[in-house]
Structures are given as C-alpha cells and as structure tokens.
Length: 317
Image (cartoon, rainbow, N blue to C red; front, side, top):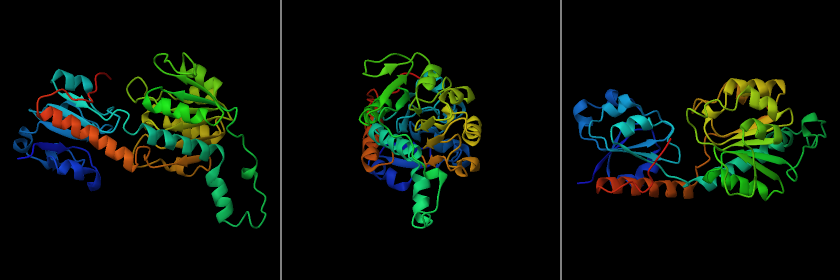
C-alpha cells in the first residue's frame, strides 16, 4: 500500500500526477484541515506536501500528531514556522535551485519590458497610433542596457543567475546580501547603498521576518526618478503601498512584478499604472522547472518514508 501524503496547498492537478503514482494523496485543496478532515483522518498523517508560501503554523502542526516531514514544492519555505517544526522534530524540505534558471529568465523579461516600455509600445502598434503617425511622449527614446547599473538584492542561486544574465547585456552589476560572496560583482554592505548606486534594483532575496517590507519608501527614494524595481522573490519584501505611491508620484520610473503582497490578486492600483509590467507569479512555471521541483519533492518524501535524512532539507531560516 502506498504511503499517505497530505497535500496541504491548492495545486493544479497536472502538477500532482507524478506524486499520485508513488503516494496515496489526501488533498486538502488549500482549505483549513479541520474544515475538511476529522481528527481521526489526520491522526495518521506523517508527511505533508505544501507550497512554501502557504502559512503552515504551529497550530496546524498540532492537528497532525504524527507529522514528521513538511515538503515544499519549490524553493521557498517562508510560510513554514521553522521554529515550531524543529521543536516538534519535523523535518522540512524544499527544492533548492530547481527553478532558478526560469526565475532568472522572468527577471530579465520584466526588466527589459519595463525599461524599454514594451507594453506601451505594443499598445501603440495595436491601437493604430503607429500607423497613424500619432505623436506619443511615451514612445520617446529610453536608456538601453549597456552601461546601466543593475543592483541584485540577494546572491543565492537565483541571484547569481540573474547577475550572469544582466552582465551579458554589458551592464555594471552590484549586489547586496547578508554576506560577501566570491563573485565578480561589486559588493555593497547595505541595501541603501545599493539602491543609491543602481538604476534597476532586482529583488532576489529569500522572504522572511528580516526582509518583510525592507524595500520601503526610503529605498525607493534612493533608487530615484530614473530607477526601476523588479521583484521575482516574494511580495512581502516590498512595502506595496509605498511602491504604489512611488510609481504614481514619479519617485521611481517603473516596476516589473511577478509577485505581490496578496496572491492571486494584484491591487487594482497597480494594474491601472502604465509604468508597471505584471506577471502572475510564473517565474518558476516552466516544464523543466516543474520536473526538477518534482524530482526534489519525490526524493525528499521517499527518503523520509524509509527513515533517511531529507536530501534537500531546509537547515535554517
């Protein structure tokens, strides 16, 4: 009989096919556990599959008295109460680096689209303004990539791939992270210093209590009226009301966003702005990334059920 795995978050059915071939899946479909299952049904669950951003609290863990492993589909694990898991002896695993290339690609797409005003240009063609030779201030020349200063906030797997990609566009690359890395880019000891130096700030830092709203009005002010922000990390890293204000009053020039404070709903104030390019958290949403993430999930769950350490264990917050 296959081992039982509780699917805690809501996932598309196609993403669960490989897991269903190996395990007996019990799907909560993103609903509260005690609204879907009885205490008896939850009493024997030993492993949970979840999206890393879904809140998984100590109270939720207490509903699963035999829980031994929480496995995140994807790189992030910011929704998991790691302290509570450690206290209960629950192993936490993720899929480190599995979607790094895809997320870095989205960062580049957003950066180029917003700095070259691609959506404005697309509308200029579709509306007939181009064929009608209609003057448009929005179509005035923009700064290109060569010589542009790109600041990468976070130098993990994704940050490194972003830096390598933007460097190929003949840019200057700088970064800020908790520690200095052996990389060929200029290191800035503070986020404030990085924001003052760069014209595009790319957020690739891991979400957590220490990074919540760290990109605030002060950082955006330092980025300046010709600056752009690109976020492919988590929506919590940016103070969203401050970002909307900065985009509205011209404090910064624009933004490219794949993540939002509340998902799947982006604030209407953002969707109304012409200097913003939005995508629905699809950074890691490629065929290759899903296969790689599923490989990590399967390896973690199978190792747990045979009593081995998780090969892709989360070891710190």
